[in-house]
Image 1 (cartoon, rainbow, N blue to C red):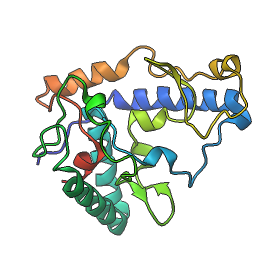
Image 2: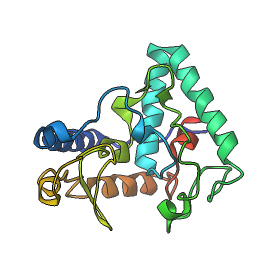
Image 3: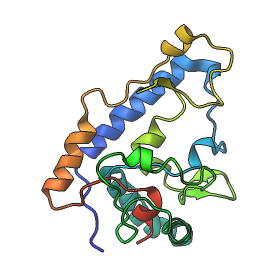
Image 4: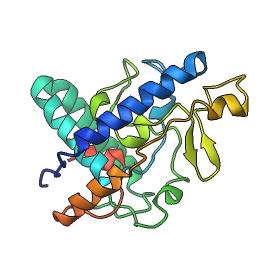
Length: 202
């Protein structure tokens, strides 16, 4: 398998997302209970872009140089997840690509207790935290979605709707991610979303 191409512009996207998360975290105060060791957002299967997949692949390559044993454990967890999920995966189990339309909806019936392969089960922390996908970077604070504002079920207990709205995280307002995904596709990269397990199981 060839090394996925990670556009240089991804660094800018990560900076934008991290700044938006820091701002939302500041405004959320005590209502945002996200802490190291909380694995609420690390369970379940969700769609990621090919940009996220390339970033994860890049992170795993770097981890292989710094800590080969941890990297090996991540790969093994990813391969085990692929083996568990392949028979029910709603996309192509050969390449891990989901249909372009309805990727998120198609994953709804998969196991909510499936742990992310990047999650270290011993520590409850992410082995690829600095390279995590966009959905992971925006989990916790209130984020706009089709149903209104989505927020982690562990957070914002006791907050009013207005107080929750005041803490909304604006994720990628200029849609830089979409431009970078198009750059990957224009360079011959895969089209369509995938999941973390397939991105890390090479």
